Image (spheres, one colour):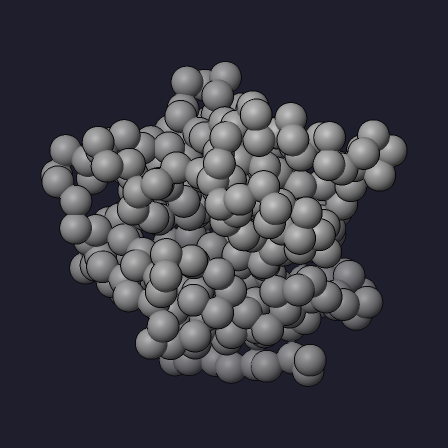
Length: 332
């Protein structure tokens, strides 16, 4: 992908030079979520240009580090989904290059990226998350898949959610209602990661709460209620316009919305996240809330949830990104 450049008038200026703040938006990469990342990156680019920044969209490829060394930007915005944008790798590269960036540190990103690790941290912090078992593909090969799956069903019951231990966008995720369907679901999960997370299915309403820190500590944006077709919020349901219905704010009692916001901020804090995140929750029929996962590089596409929440909060996406970029440059 060639670099995409742009500049808008009245750009926010670097305090030391008076020149417009230069932001490098990193998108693309080689993960399964490349196309979604490019869509996110272009929307971030447009929002930054609209806010007055000098901005450029660039792929994370072999030319990146030489570019950062020869002509470092004032800040970077990571819009890569999947590895390396969410597993701490790209954050480590930016730290090595001395380029400040919007988003979590490498350590925090790694914790959130590994779903079993993140769930363990949440449990230790007293934050509810569904029961789970995690096993690598090699264990099934060495100890026998059928026997292990039988024990998983006895331990967690049915239905189950089968997920890759890493990754996002609903890739490789499947709800299983019968033991006969488990082997195929495991194969699907192993196609995206060498380790699978088998999680007790919790019926309820899917809700996403985005968290942003605009200088006054992490705050929850309005919750987004997700109503996918057939209750399956897979890749197509997430990114194909017109398939899924969203409600923001979510159609839930005020007390439940307040608790969802509290749990989302607590999750963001427990994992040590920074600047922005999206916390995926499930709200049970009795109003109990459990955390499914945390995302350190939330989608920014036309069907993504963080931009919806920003709009519902009465804010402009460009203005929010401006505050986040300003915080990043101040850290630099």
